[in-house]
Image (spheres, rainbow, N blue to C red):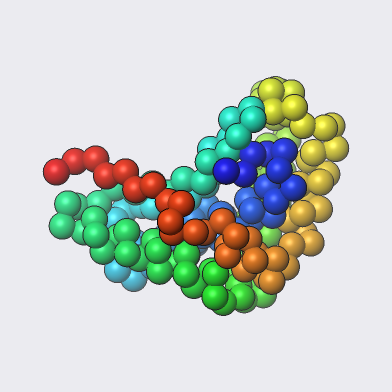
Amino acid sequence: TVSCQHPDFLKFRVLMTVFGGYFGSRLMSNIREVKGLTYGISAGIANFPDTGLATISSETATQNVEELIHEVYHEMDVLCEQLIPDAELEMVRNYILGEMGRTYEGAFSLAEAWINTEISHLSNDYPERAMQAVQEVTSEELRDLARKYFVKESVFEVVAGQ
């Protein structure tokens, strides 16, 4: 697990966004747009005060479950083997920075961000460090993080339904 206090967390968040954290992500592009296996699929990090959990979620027809899971692992392998192209990384950076800006744009969202900072025991410079990590992370670092955390043997698959 990668908690929000972990040194890898801020850059790992970028990797998870590339993987499945926005509409143009690898999972959405392949599994929804190319394969047509689902209407939506996403990946992210579930944060808890002292731990974190990388998650992938989707809904699909029963007959597509195995192929969908296979394609998730395929996208993990690609991120472990290949560098993310500069144009894709720049688009993800812009997306994340835009989302961060929205997090701090109003009184209620600002209060929620502050509460999260307090509950998670983060320092007051967390927003600045987060922005810096997004701006400075390299494709090589993201590939290394994929190799470190996208370990198939540590993945738990949960399928509900038939």
